[in-house]
Length: 167
Image 1 (cartoon, one colour):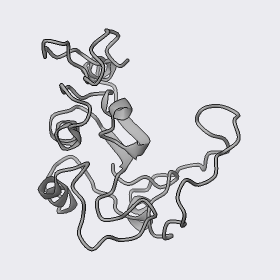
Image 2 (image 1 turned 90 degrees about the vertical axis):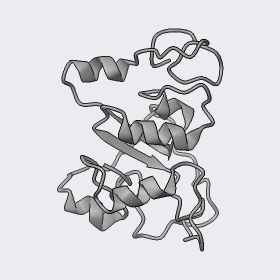
Image 3 (image 1 turned 180 degrees about the vertical axis):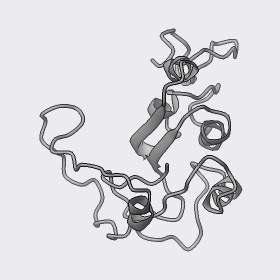
Image 4 (image 1 turned 60 degrees about the horizontal axis):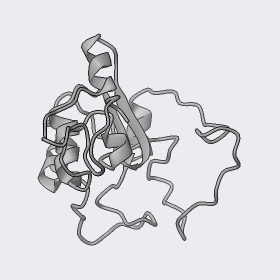
């Protein structure tokens, strides 16, 4: 979808023999334009990850996340899958490492992975000086919004679609 070429189901940005395909984001990045991924699912899931990633398996989330953070020209990555919280926005006793390598996440939190700025909560996002407008409709047109998929509301200090989690 993001390369303009058919590949095998379950693969991201690679031919069946493993050769890398150039994505549209890579082409645009090569032209000096800004690129990014903004999603309400973990950014390393297949659809958002396909913007840049190259992997034989769409299920290798931590490898995909590492490529997007360490080896891409992406300027912005916003997404879900925060390892310190469950799907209801409740803090976990132990972080889960399903979507990102925890030592990599910690190095980003500490500011050790230039040019990334880790945004953990609404206050961090507001400190960037970004001026976002709240969407009045869904991104998919004029369809009515679906009910919140989780049983509990997220704590007000957690980022929302209006205040994403990474920059």
